[in-house]
Image (cartoon, rainbow, N blue to C red; front, side):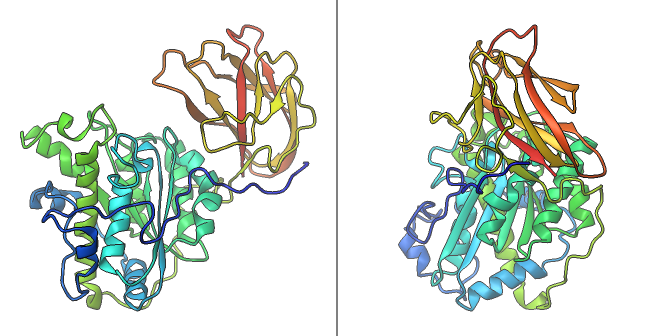
Length: 417
């Protein structure tokens, strides 16, 4: 396999200090961010970002076994002692801040970051947002190292429950993602956030079972809002412009749930043991993606580019080193050493996008459809193509299907483990 120098991920990561990126804005009492910063650490709780969450909603949201809080307490103690910290999130479009009026101010992730800065005003709280719309934990486990863990976060929220399904495939990728975060050298505290679609569709069942197994803190937005909507306290349209994404009020609800939860843990800090328990739990699924990563034009050279061109500057997703064709009569060919291989490719509403076959070691394993003309918008799709128990060198080809309806296709990157 031919590799190039590693790429540097720039587009998705948002690193901010006290005055950049997320803004504390005003709390429910109309205080400015400056006023909030002056709150003494002895005054509990930190004022909430909204007043949308009833006590019943909050109790439903945290109605899980809250598990081992020693990592989270350790981060709070370090911040209390004046140590700068980094907080981060990884997930799909909700985490990215889609449908928030200002992703740098009104998204749930920024509300979460603001709690840490308001709680500990004398330190710098850096913030990493690794949310990408339309993506699942399968892509997440392959990108988490470079796009989140390399920034050494102290506290992490994972949110993939509306992008994953309740299947063994997603249970495995989510499990591998959690284990990779928990096993990281920096030992970040981890909290699982469960969001929901309007009809209640969510991977919360799978995710919560894994959370129970690893004794992780868990907060459910779905548990909070769906019964309240059913009882007539408010409507789904009050918290979302569509069937999935929270608007500012919806993000504020998630933010308030997180504020309340972090306030509660902070208030109990003296009760939580100082000794952080090491992560030694056995995997709940197989660990095939545990060391997953992405190969693209920055670290992989094809054997033959065929009709493809490397890299297009007008790409609107965070991955810039990719291969693209407008007619694809000649295949692009790679040598890839891996036990498991997947492909991240483009789906586009442009009707000129077509269907391409993937060959591994001379055998056609899948036909992928880049044509998304009747879909909700341009997106990336991550699809598993090949699994085995042992790494080997494979010849991989991307070839236009003879019956393709269009000539365009984009190979964004290979997902390998």
